[in-house]
Image (cartoon, rainbow, N blue to C red; front, side, top):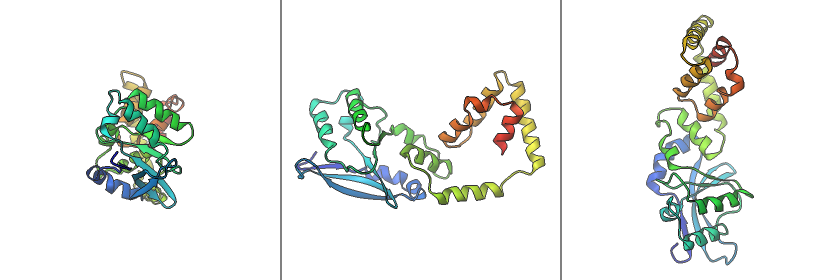
Length: 230
C-alpha cells in the first residue's frame, strides 16, 4: 500500500503473455478504480476483463503477502480491509505471478469471502501449463480457469471446422476397430487404456473429465470408441 491507494493491477509483462488468448475469448483488458466503502478515501486500482456487461476483477496481491510462508499480522489486516476496497459486483480472480499456493491464514480469509461472492484463486503453475499459443485448447482451458464460457463465435467456428473434417463412415469403422483391438489387448483395463489415450490429447480439461466419467467408461470398448470418434 502506498499512501491512500492500493495498486492491485496485474503486471503488464505478465498480462501481455495472456493478451492474445484473452482477446480470442473476446475479453477487453482495462483498469478500474474503486473507493473503499468505509472512509471513501482509499483508492484501489485493479485490472478488469470485460465482455459486454460481464466484468471479472483480477486481483494481483503483494508477493510478500501471497508467499506460502505465514503472512504477518499487518498483511492480514490489510487483506481484511481490502474486502471493503474492491468492487461489490462481479467475480474476483486472485492470481499472482509465481504464486502456486496460499498461506493457510489467507486461504481461510478467502473462504470467508466465498460465502457471499464468487472468488477463485488460480495457481500460476496452471497458467504456465496452458497449451501453446497456437493451439485451440489454450483458449478453452483459460476460460475454464477464469470460470467463464467461451464466446459463441468460438463454439460456432469449432463446430463448423469439426463438421468439415469428419471422417467417412468407412474410415470411422477402421479407427474404431483399431482402438477396440488395442483396448482389448491393453495390460490394464480398457477404461485405463482410453483414459491414458484421452490424457495425451490437447482437449480442455473439462472435456477430458466429462468423457472419462465412470459411467462412460463402463460401456463396452467398441461402443466407447464409437462415441469418441463421433
